[in-house]
Length: 442
Image 1 (cartoon, rainbow, N blue to C red):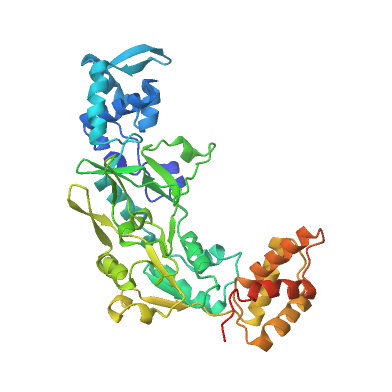
Image 2 (tube, rainbow, N blue to C red):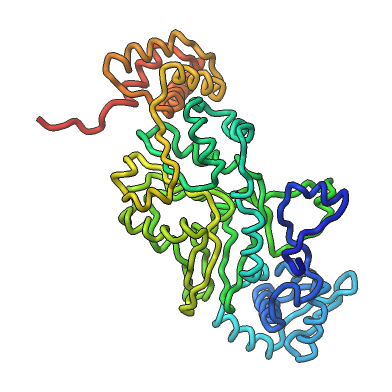
């Protein structure tokens, strides 16, 4: 494979890079970037319009293209009197600034598209990268799941159901009463797969820019400065991130699943399912979105079946993109009350997250005691259950040990007393934690 998507490294280095199924190689020529000369020229000029004066290497750093690839472009722009030298720079470089003609040209270009930043990656290269890094190639086993869930309490029976579902890479429903950790489980599932992937900062298709990298959902990973892998350069239009877990709740609308086009800048923003490629997309509290569940699910029937989606550019052109993520629906409602059998067939796993047993409730208090820096006292938890749960038929939820201990900590901190699990502390916080805000009128 040639171009920016080729895999680098042979021998020892290839062994060290074995965990990376994809690594974007540095383009050695403009042709390997997949971009036109005129596009790169415009990107350079728009950067100079923002900063005023900059060295050639600084411009290369900003637009994430090798300086060697840009040298001839700088020379051409200078010959055509779009740029001029504003002084010498270190290492056989120059500082550049726009001419009057260059500023006029850049203003016209900025009105057409105001994007300034890392040079985009052609869509075809992104498609190849998703195929190489898909979670469906991972097939995590029991040990990967055990590691991902090591610091939380997971019922053994649930583990037996969840494991094959995660291993399949297909969609799943997590349903059950609120407060039992459905969202927590969903977030941990991503870490069962390979840890890191590469994504481009932005894409280009049919001359349109689509921003993909989003620090609201993507966590950048710095490579170890002392490692041999670090010494292997990569195409800086790409950024290494942790496998994404994109979480959306009641704010989800159908518009979130389409390219959001800014008519002022003429730049698009990738939809949520695209940002979650090679990771997990968690639809939290499903059924309580502002859009009807049926409409939302109908939007995904074809992508779930075919593993690709169709999006529309501002020009009206439709194009195909990968739909390669584990999609998880977390809901407090019974799935059959939300969707029909046709859709349920496309979500092969439906896993109920039930209430914890008393034994697990104790284990949760023991786990959170370490977090809150207090001693776990079994007799105090027994008192809590026998006084405030069992006689009232009150269901236990997995979030309650954390919440109750948090309130005890707040009380103890306020009164400047040691943080302890004590029956009287439980009596105090249970009263405020479970009391209804509004009582029913007779």
